[in-house]
Length: 170
Length: 198
Image 1 (cartoon, chains in turn brown, green):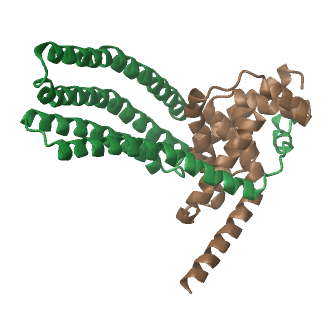
Image 2 (image 1 turned 30 degrees about the horizontal axis):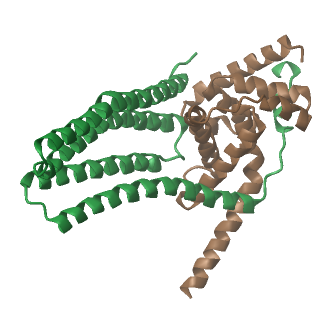
Image 3 (image 1 turned 90 degrees about the vertical axis):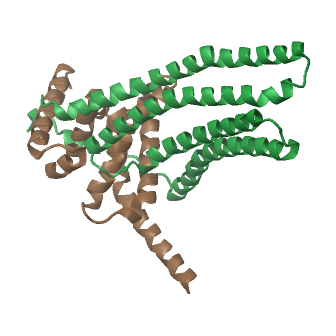
């Protein structure tokens, strides 16, 4: 009896997780991609994020929206990357050059991700979330800034990006 | 808006198919295994060594008090090392990854600072305990040797302890500190991005 309920519960959690995975995979991947601008590393980071989501799902208490909760985990995982980069230096192969060819995206898209990845760490997270249509109040909540500060930052980052695009003739 | 560049549209064109969920769950198991393995190996190794030393005590029944004190010091050195090692692993486990970025960074900085302290202080303490424990322990057995071999044994042992103390220990501390300091500096720089309103 107890066994079957536990099994059922597990099934429900799996289903819930699958749902989250489907709706948030792309968004989390893009956040990671904006952070590192490296296809393979971004994919690994997105996977790590979902591993944490899976492990922590039972602690989610509806205090924030599930989106905010997942983005917090994802962005913290990005920040943790600093630690890992030092431990495992990236291979010397110019990986993203081959990736760019491989995935043949429009140059404008590639340029946008390149520009985002060149911003300071926190700015990368802020602008990625903004481009993902996350509400500014939520971005403030994820990053830990005031709403006013977040708004100002978003404005400035967009200006910077526009400038870079113009300079590059995109 | 945005001088006619629709960043949001560009951004969302970067699409990637999510990998199979089964692959993700199998990766999860692998992750758990790897992190557990290191923890288990260190613990088992040091506990086994301690158990072996206790076995010697029980089996050979040393007569001198110095031998017993030596054994206790050696074991406490290893237990202390284990305690600190497990505590450090625990630090990372307690970090709440669902906090906001700024809280998370603060937490990482505080962990790294603690790690910095523990590693340098504890490593020195570990060597002191282990070295003095060994010297005391060996006394009973060398006292049964001829003077020449007794002195010879101590010279070799002290030579080894000196080598670890003056060469290995500072090298290890320096290496670890450079790494941890670099990380703290980097985390603080990122944290500053949150406070500086420029």
